[in-house]
Amino acid sequence: MSPLTSSRGPLRLVALLTALVLLAGCTGGPPSDIGAPARPTATSAPIDDGVPDAPETLTEPPSSIGAVDVATYFMEMYPHVLATGDVDEWQRLSAVDCVFCHAVVADLDALADQGHHREGGAVTVGYSVVSAGAEAGSYSVGLSMNEAPARVVDSHGEAIGDWTEPQSYVASVLLVHDGASWAIQAVEPAPADG
Image (cartoon, rainbow, N blue to C red; front, side):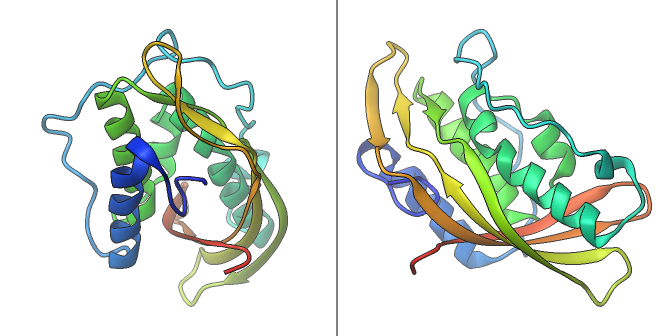
């Protein structure tokens, strides 16, 4: 199964921690960088061929179309982040109080701390629904997503955990444009059948 919902073997703790963080909501700040383990680099982990292209609307004034594009882009970055350790764009788009955003980085750190990385799991977005929030520039985007099969690999290239069936999710993505840039405030994924 996907670490977004549950896991087996060495990822069980990571999945449990992620679930607890998601249940807590987006009220806390990001985890401290003090003592953070080294993340895999492009040379220590396979390069994910599914790096999404940034949408043109990322640099345009806020709009419903832009909100959908940015939410889609952010979620499509998920497998790339876990495969390569490249969190620059992910963190640039993550609001300080986005629990899910920072939990993904914490999951990555936990994998890297064990010498593991993830392969596969490309995310494709199906339909989307968007509504403007009460504050100017804020939006709520509902996405349907499919995650391809993936696996977790140790430092020797051996698979230590995998899920062979595609996973389907729905996600609520809250984001805001402050007049200069977009920020993801919260992501709440759930199994599509649950």
